[in-house]
Length: 432
Image (cartoon, rainbow, N blue to C red; front, top):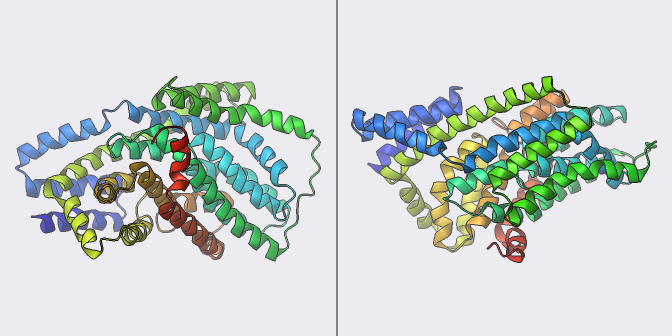
């Protein structure tokens, strides 16, 4: 029963995936085929309807569209430009400073928007023309932007961490958020170190730009944008509002900034709302379909069978973590982050619980691992957006992405095997 259900479920899913069928549809069809094999048709129809509704009937899930809208507003509301100017002020003395600016700006912007794709698009559109004017290789510029963007889903607030919290059965969002700071910074520094090494070899210079604006004014202009993070995180930690309510506060605050900066109008606000609605509908459909798949997997005993198989390889937790990381790195090349979180959390979480790994630590490891997948073909969302914005080809950026990818994997294994990187701040805050 278990073997048949596993082969049928994942066989149909991967056939659909390689046939170019949208992932959410592939998950739904694979679940339907396996469900009809496992249940009478009338019972399965009722069960699927109940499960698909219950999967999205969650107040916590409302945080996702609000943070998505907040990120969209930041992209169009003049916030990104101010963060770039601040980043250039901080790292302008470094050779290849525009690449360093890109990394730092992605960390700033990701910390506010919680979206690696939004960071890739926003920072790429701003930084690429500047780097082109100073003679940077466009492929190098695009690679730095692509590989530094995943910091946005680790440094809070983070939509994927909220999704993991719900999928894992209510792991503290506040603990996940606070645990994401050091791993996100570590990931950014690893990418930055490789980018600076390449910049040195290519002979890129430090900044020669003479700012007409006083340094203090650049800092003051950026403070309101950075305050978004402080308001959101302080509100969650102090219990002023839930993560969902924090998303609303983020939208209102960033929307007000956009209108104050005169970068936002009612017309483009409508367009941002429409874009958010479309992306949210896609995510909710995906979650709904994945809920049916998760139920069928549980009913058929698939997570337990996979767990036993992995545990049968070794009882050493370090070996098990290595196996999981390698598996997730490979699967991250073929699956987008959202369905991967929904599929693999119920499979791997019981395994790590069995040897005492904190669910907060595992959640950050999982999201960081799958975030690395967003820079790799054939499904990497940051890769395709970054190449599109930078007007370069995947072949062209690959030679620069490979060493940065290695640095990102180094960061992943440091986070995996040194729990304190994830758990230090949550422990200091009394959250774990």
